[in-house]
Image (cartoon, rainbow, N blue to C red; front, side, top):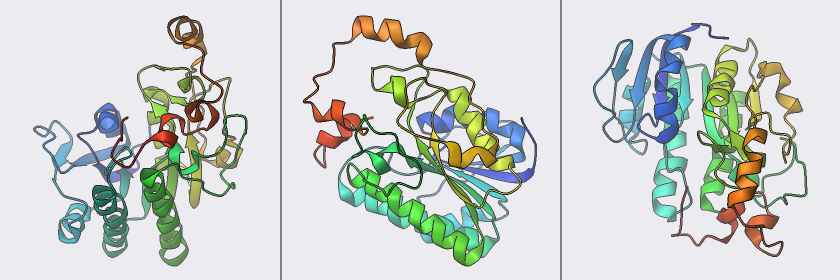
Length: 271
């Protein structure tokens, strides 16, 4: 369902993998799509405008937010790594974004959170959005902060937010873990569209996953969004089993939902 509800929609992190995947489809949801990143996103195309900004620069973020009705916030450090950059982009940056939204009257944010907010739950468990965070690294900690900050800005200022705990969003699953965590690009767009168009969003935490037969996450609390995934990891199962080794049951990456993130040092971040 594509409903052009928003006059100007801001997409941060537009140069990233998921930003590029959403760049064209999101135009169905707005009259003007404003693209932002700290690096070049190329020339503006039809129905686009570009405002580059570093999320840690409060003045630049305030300028970026002017005239914006809603935000799809993908910007920031997307993986585990040194705390300094995560602090600036994911903690200071998300504060700057919400404070700019408050000052500019922006009423709705789709916040790219992460499954790594709950990465230390076991793969043998099924959790809901009501389970307490158990981050698997500084990246997950920063996303948990963003979820809490967005809750505060909803309770205090009425800015609605969908915290989308993105699983593993790739064109197709690349390992056995992704049989549970996979989110296709098509379903990513369908989920973001549901968050942008539902009449009453409130403050919602939703797991970003496709219709996978094996899953660790119960999305029932987000049914009011109207999200209906159409893709599944199941067609990839046989080929993945054929080309990948059986996981070691003693390996923390096979025990915990965060996968390889649970054994990364602070400087080992990988996608």
